[in-house]
Image (tube, rainbow, N blue to C red; front, side, top):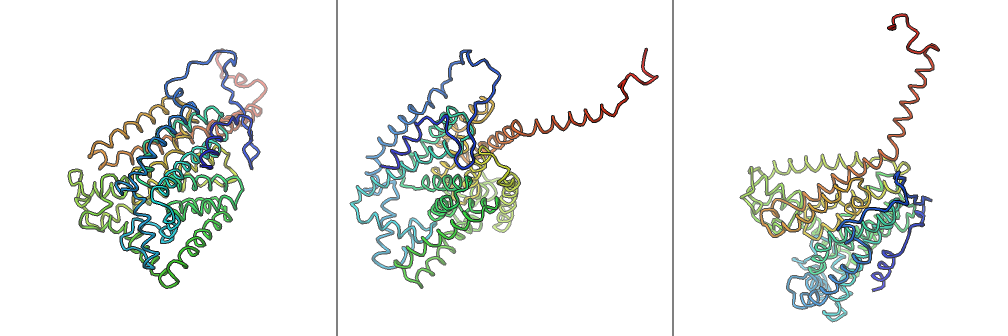
Length: 477
């Protein structure tokens, strides 16, 4: 409960005068041109709901009320993966190798071993602690987003934007807690690691990001991002930490030979096997469930009749053609992201860092071969940036409305098969890019362009005769 309590204190603490650590940037209220003595317009419903203390109360009421249900579901193994994780760990302790159908088959073998710690506890107690750890990760994520990604925003805007993002994603997060997923912990560690690395705290950032990559391989995108920014040290630290954790847990549990075999099996069946099933599978596979909102599976449903939803298919491509089409689309998306994120680290302001990290978290949704509903908690940083920094209220309300409608459409099978939340995340990404462009233009480009234009005009007018344009004899009388 300590991380949960600390996160609550950070979320509610006033930070109007706090400097952005490591960068020496102190918040200055924006000059809006308004009379400060004039009464501000009353806040709208969204602003009222997003008051930090009220939002935290709503969140705590939801997650704590769900705690008994989560424990019951874990103990009875009904709709919760916790007991499956425990059984996978017990199988290793008894037989010395990984269960062929482990629930953690898409994760490194050492993740199975890590769950041995929970086997020492009664199931109900371990399930309760596991649930509270996930809830603590949620509050830690919100705190990191508020104070790490939004340092240049007005403190009240940052708090309300973060709470708005948290409330919009609360249903998805709570669903993940009840299912027994630990995706929120990965999102928090990835955000925290990248924030620390952006502030020059290379060791801390590398260690946090390394833990995220070890939990799930998706945050390896963050290591690539650090390499793009030429931040070699945290990228190297994160990579070495993943290797160190994996070796430290696997060698005592499996031995050298079995560890090698487990990793080879993971690569061929868990990592590459998942993609191969989606591209080349001739029959229905587990990833074809309509709850999967990944780009690859959406293309499988749209472009083939093998995706489990033939009503939506507009073509029936061969596995080879589907692989080429998928690689082309994801390749173009990756190239576009590299172009957007190519600016050197020295040219980024704190607000730029926050927006780029939020965009990077969206990439974990867009490029993952499997995107269950709780994976969409990775959209929280982008929602927070939009809600706190977008210059037009209509864009904030439009994003909130689309997101809420998307949640409602979970009850419609066709909408789920069509990737309704995937497209919602792409819309969030588009608005985030627009917000980034507007903020950069407002902060830098207009002044640069204006000064350049005025400088050219001054130099041009200085070269004119003293009489200016009226010195020519052809001028009208």
